[in-house]
Image 1 (cartoon, helix red, strand yellow):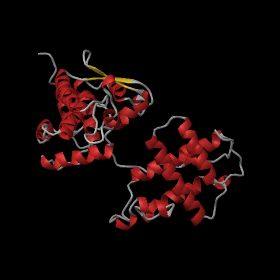
Image 2 (cartoon, rainbow, N blue to C red; image 1 turned 90 degrees about the vertical axis):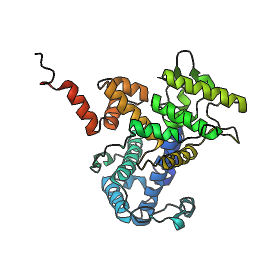
Image 3 (cartoon, helix red, strand yellow; image 1 turned 135 degrees about the horizontal axis):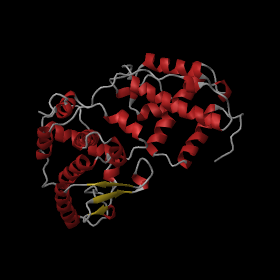
Image 4 (cartoon, rainbow, N blue to C red; image 1 turned 60 degrees about the horizontal axis):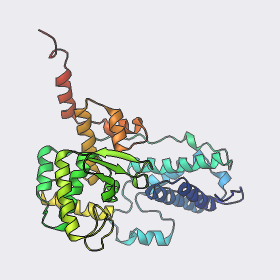
Length: 334
């Protein structure tokens, strides 16, 4: 990593920080998020505060920036003209609309990570860690009922290559709780048909560690049918290739297809491919009587705390069912 000196301005140090993130092998998605947040923040400091010196960075400036962003709304501030073009600013209809507290907290989280880096490298002794996150009202994630899930997969045409592929992906995520990106980057070498297990290699795993998940006998039948079909059309080790280019399928392309299937099935819920992973987690917790530790390992979370925060917001109906099984009066011995 390049040597850092106190004479460099904030934009120079952001570049070094991003290189450090790459060295730490953080995901490209995380690095992109850091870069976008910090570049906008640096632009704000320069234009609104006339500050480029890293030593001037403090808690008050960060809090003012978060408030500034909240007041301005969506897409109302851009670091560069090129960035504005990439975001299609001139075509957006949501410019200036309210930014969610969750998004603002994500900006603050990224800036705090950068501030910790500054302290660790003795660039400054800032007080940014004292910035408080905005309180957010947690909403239960929308779930697919059994009937809705059956309806969804019924509206996928498995006579078409890309729809049969997507049908298999949907069932696999629903059955294993894998992330979409992990699923789309699997190869046939990652699948153990006999033991019905999948090795998710570190290089495609968000946690950067090898992880194993398991799938059911029903999923095994679907997967083997797909493999026979795929191999008859294409020669590739990719498990879910694109039909034309025989390459990895991009997340956004799959997400677009998924929205088509929801529309066909007339399911008017805020459901995404990630919702299938959430659905798996919810069902696992209910079936396992709340075994959060095992669920955390299956999902590949960095800690049990992450799992608890993400998946303990069970729906009222789920809680009602759990209660009925453990009601003291119902379980009194006669």
